[in-house]
Length: 319
Image 1 (cartoon, rainbow, N blue to C red):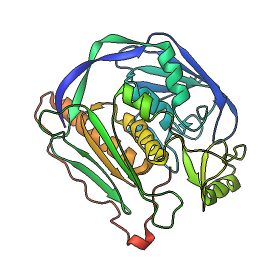
Image 2: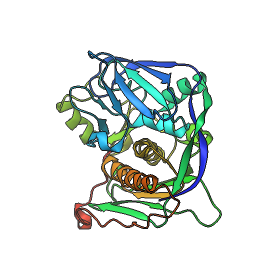
Image 3: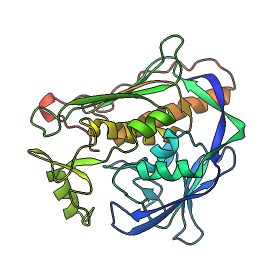
């Protein structure tokens, strides 16, 4: 990774509050976004526990990626953090204290729209310290079980971050193959991504309910796909599932703790590969920062960790 520029850090102008019911456990939750000093980063605080334990939103604090991203220990951590992190990263809010009185944020409608609305109402302020913008010198590529994710340098003269996601559950899936590409800017995120909801197949929903997850939810409250398409609901976009995958990716990539300029291209990636990319980027940024120079880190391609499975055994990583 190499530094290609800087921008001033941002935090909230005032506090913001969001209330709702958690998707996983179904408990009522109050979440508060609070302004934070420069270089704080994004930090979750469990106000329901003694001593208010804090868990920074960093890739090295991830303890689970099965259908959602979990930070910290089972006793003091927070699960399903990706929608909150996507809202903050999508709006370029760098420093924020995120207080909540449960082990998960409010689920709302399965998207980040409610968080974005609260954050926009609170407003943002520029801070004195600057935040470097990093770009890969060579592509960083990760692959696992038929899914891939890569961060490519921008073409000459281009800056900023773009994400392209291809969702592919296979020919017999009720969710058609779809691709979505967007620039990662506050305006584009709020307009095109934030309101896109989490989704799953009907047999996946049944399996989760048997595990005690989401028993309070109905198909009308999330996007559930059966053999004939979405059940008891209406899509906001024909490619809403792919857009939600981009939402998740933006939230997971926020765990690298750095501004990234380049083109992220993902095929069937889920939380596991997203977090792996965040970790790889974070490690390279840390090495470059320790060197305290602008020489590019040329370590790029990462070989598949498990290789590609035969096509008949491939599965799209879960939402």
